[in-house]
Length: 66
Length: 251
Image (cartoon, rainbow over all chains, first blue to last red; front, top):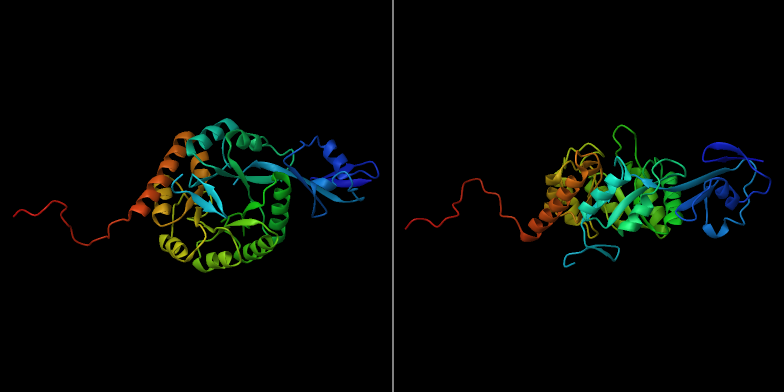
């Protein structure tokens, strides 16, 4: 299956969860948040939320700004 | 802390809110933040892996609260999603709401701003909206439940100071939430003027981070904010047309 992760097309194993995508990105354990097709996925649901084929996943963190 | 800034029931000893944008590196930023005495500092939300990581660790180490912003958002929908992601990532329901109309002016889009503010207040956020210096819009933002209003002195990054002091005074005169002057500050006298006009605090970034000596300018801003606050509380003399001798007249 394919998904667009932070704007880049990625090939993912079928049934990949949000937690798996975060592992792929080597995301830190805190300070990040995930939106799946424009909806926030709460931290508590990362392990159980499966990324649908063709979905857009955005993984955000805080940076210098403002 | 005998004169704290109180926003949504939370007290801050410093009336200078710092932004983190524009610093050459984290070490310059750290020295500037320490010199500023700030207790609240904005951060932006960006895709993971973008350069500029490590700011949260720095703020945690310095004991400064992170205030996520929605910088870069153009619509209410984008801003609401960004705020919700920030709440999830940073475990705070405070947000500096920015909804920008265009890249050339970076002025707030008032229609999208009000829409986003309403939705975020309904969603339980403590909303601190960056707004134009329009007294009517500022009042509307307060009425829908924003915890502060943050009018600009002049457009972001211009350093033009407070272009319309009368509007800032009008906003202050009617607001019952803190008014935080946000954007346009160029140097310490601008920060002092904001406080003399009755603002509760000043938010700035560029004036410090892009100064030739950010650490020294941060100290200047801290002193400027404190001087302006003291002067406001002290009560200035009325302006007079003719001179008025301060020494007693000769008998």
